[in-house]
Length: 148
Image 1: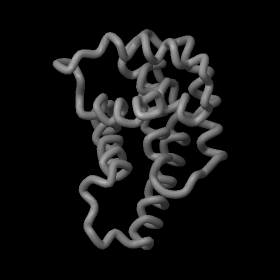
Image 2: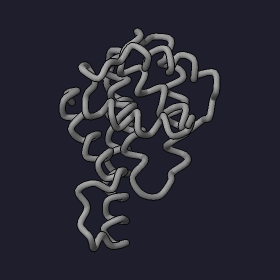
Image 3: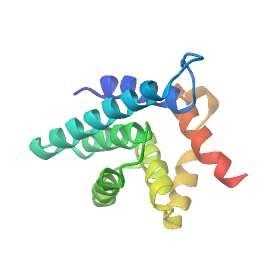
C-alpha cells in the first residue's frame, strides 16, 4: 500500500466531491455504487491498519485516505468515529508536515474541535503556491470557505 497509490485514490475522491469528472446524467444508482465502493475501500484500509505494524506517517496516509473516502456517499458515523479516535491517538506522534495538516483539516471537519485550528493555520501558513499540490488545493477549497 504505497503513498502514491493512496494519493491517487484520494485525488479521485476529491474530484468526485468537487463534482469534477462526472457525467451529466450522474444517477442515484451511480451515487449508491460509488458509496458502496468507498465503504468497501474504507473497511479494507481499516483491516490493513489492524493487522500491520506501520510507522506514524504510514498510518496517517491511510487515515487521510479513509477520511477522504468517507466523504463519498452517505454518512457512516461509526466509521467516521473510528477514524477520528485513531487520528487523535496518532497526532502526538506525527511531525509537522503537509500530511499532518491534511489529517487535521479532515479531523476538524468531522469533530469541529476548535483546538485544532491554530495548528492547522500555522501549518497552512508555510505553504506557497509553488509548493502546493493538486491535493493541497482541494484541501484548501474544503477548509477556507468555513472562515470567509
